[in-house]
Amino acid sequence: MNFMDWYRADRLPTIFCVGCGNGTVINCALTAVSEVGWKREEVVFVSGIGCSSRAPGYIDADSLHTTHGRALAFATGIKLANPDLQLVVFTGDGDLAAIGGNHFIHACRRNVDMTVICMNNQIYGMTGGQGSPTTPRGALSTTTPYGAEEGTFDLTALSIAAGANFAARWTSYHVKELTNAIRAGLETPGFSFIEAAVQCPTGYGRRNRLREPEDMIEFFRTHSMLRQKYDRLLAEGKLVPPDTIVVGEFVRRDRPVLGGKK
Amino acid sequence: MSKISFIQGNIACAEGALAAGCRFFGGYPITPSTEIAEHMAMKLPKVKGTFIQMEDEIGSIAAVIGAAWTGVRAMTATSGPGLSLMMENIGYAVMTETPLVIVDIQRGGPSTGQPTMASQGDMFQCRFGSHGDYSIIALSPATVQEMYEMTAEAFNLADRFRVPVFLMADEIIGHMREKMTLPDTVPVMPVRERTERSTLPFKAEKDGVPGFTPFGKGHHVHVTGLTHDERGYPSTTNPDVHERLVTRLVAKVESTRREIASYDVTNPEAETVFVSYGAPTRAVWQALHDLKDDTVGHFRLKMVWPFPDWVEELFPQAQAYIVPEMNLGLISRELERHVTIPVISVPRLGGALHEPEELIRAVEGAK
Image 1 (tube, rainbow over the protein chains, first blue to last red):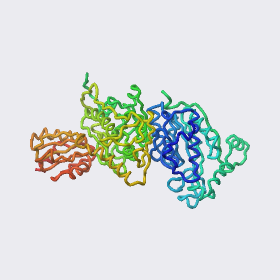
Image 2: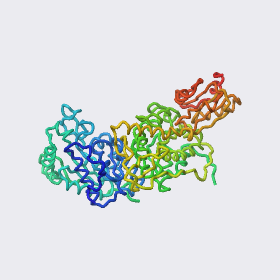
Image 3: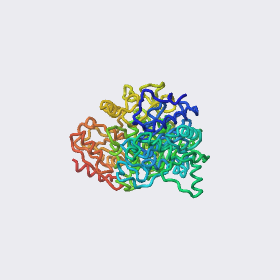
Image 4: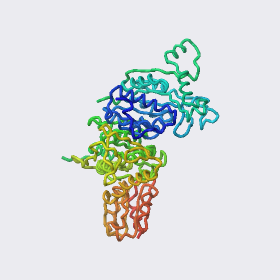
């Protein structure tokens, strides 16, 4: 199956803005699901609320579009009640790290067998561009009109500290790497976390000198650094620019899993 | 062979759920409901069921809704503070027509209030607590036997109407131990599941309820808390779609209120009528026993929501209703909407049950 075969044709086009990165991530995810050979009948797509969370509504399979922040708790119930079902969760930085932060760390701790794809656009897109827990310090948003003052979450590091079996970070520029990472996540038992940095020209870019979609994709290209290189530079005591996006696979391990096939 | 047992109300509730085929419990410890979770934690793994203690009550009800969509009978149990946390997802369950059972062992509120003392302060919260217009079903047990039987029946009602069904008990009934008969089996109604994939999974049948389409069976159903059409697809700006959906969600329950109503009528020709539900029912029973007066009747609600609004047909000679409640008068307010004669509220706060003498004095005062 091709990724296009997974779409609900009667639901297209999506509600995403022109230039949004979410579609790229959905395509990568569906390509990965196709590659591992899962059938529609055995996979459930779950999401919370926000732009990213509209994804399951476009996929022709069982799908649960839940309440803000709670997708992982719903998905935990599905997986434990029927371990034969495969779970893929789409979420965003606001949904996962702000209102859903507690469910996030506990789903990692339980190491529930599911794959979670976080489209991190560093902003609340659906509500018009408010600051989120991943909005960089100094960035402008409608609720940080003088620049964000708070620190940010490193979502991938958080998932590792909380116990996820697999964690990777890529961007919407890295289509092939992102697809492969999602596939590895699908194939790794336990909680797999894939953070995908995505461009939001409407909510984030136009307020932060990255007005055109290609501006942000170019930013991802020029500011991404493989974790191996990042680690080496750190070890050598060299300075790494603070706006670097460290990409790659960060952990793949075998902690005991909750909700594996019975 | 049914067997006679002497057990706690909360344990009877858990046993009733297990007998009804409940195979998923998601919960969070909270007094005075915790024994239900503990008993399910012990028993569910032995029947290939799943128990999970979630990180909070928001997660508990979310996990229960997720589990219910795999086609298993699923429940949670909590008390007032936990119920408050569940409210958003209760609305989600209503909107997505997810069958599930919520047990509320009520304690004194607001806020943390009285964790170990009884109250009936959540009777409006269970009915109106989530945002938007909707309807649910709420049962109110007054005995340990009913903790068992009503919990089992709650699953049948949840499946039939695809709504959350509440067992609105309280600390007294939950923690009380008394004799009960454990039946061999409980009536389990089959779920009306769609057998084939439909392009209109949320198209209702004649009774206003769509056939269920659990995950993993090829239905490719999209479930959303957004206003949706019969395909299950979001349709959030069309006024007609929203009005049609919400009207149906309310009507599928409310239109059957006479059929599903559950109450006891004592002395229908009475002039003074007690109206009770839950624990105060026991004080009313004692008062009636002590009074030995045929002019005093009793309307005892076993199902509080939907409210049986035809009370006056049942007590045509009634001159006054006396409503003892462990709150400042919630259901008495609902009763007032439906009757033309005086409704005397006998509120009780603090956790102690009404004294029968207090109720007898109320009868004398009403005459």
